[in-house]
Length: 397
Image 1 (cartoon, rainbow, N blue to C red):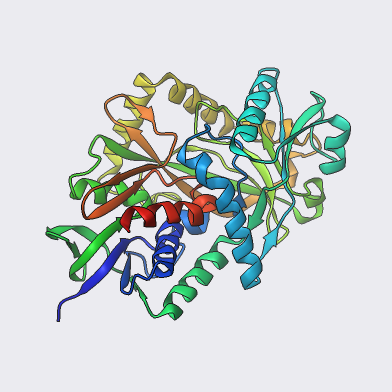
Image 2 (cartoon, rainbow, N blue to C red):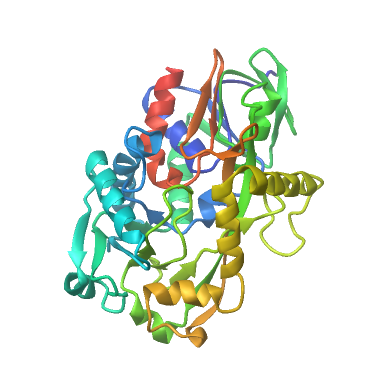
């Protein structure tokens, strides 16, 4: 019997699941989702911080700007509908150096242009929101619509809804390997025929795209982020989310403090190149590709001054005292003994344009007559997913 589907989606992360949901709502009858892991949430979709971003950082007109705010609204509504954990505390962006003041104004401009709610507040108002945040520069940006969720709970609820629809099968332990013919994909479990293919493979999306002859000028550079957490008796130092003012030239928001839905305050992440797409700790996740990734890192350090500055800054943060300094710039009362090891670690699948060494700042979508390939589905992809999925589904219909 032939394995034939209207749509085959590669990857059961947040993008794959929400695209399937959008297609079911458009009347698509037979949807297969291929997931190479044995369970949901083994990688970025299940390992992220759980923050629903509010759409303030992104260049107006970009895909991130277009879909983040509506995605935030839809995911909050989804959590409320299904009774999933949701903490709506907002966040503050706190300047830690003089140059941050101009960047804060630029972020406010982008927020206004994107339709996000963001308010510049003085030190007194900041102290009312986050009593222990630094008021060194007597200003901050308060972003009311930032929220925190449980990513694993959302993934499970989406998968359950899709399975109950009767139109979607999630096939675990099955990897997409490449084309097997017109509108056919070869998998680790055999050949599948489809009307449309959606490549939502996350950290492996470039590999899938390359196998289909798409986007070969791009490659994914995995960046690993590790966290610490505040001791429970010191967690009162953070009410919601305290962020630094980021470098808008680099797609990384910096070390921040977030109170999760479980009341644990996580601090981080660090950010440095990983030598594998699943290189979370130690030697685990190293592959023959690791040398190629190392070569990409060294090449970027030569070609891209922004990446070079970022790498040097993050190397400093990995030194004893460097991480603590970044944290104390935000919350001066935190001491070294307040920070303890956390299990959370994730990998950002950052897309790089190989010929120029440029880091891709937006989502990137390739479409042909039979497939859509979603590359660089990094933050705020989780937040934007439900709105972004509508856009992708429209591309199929």
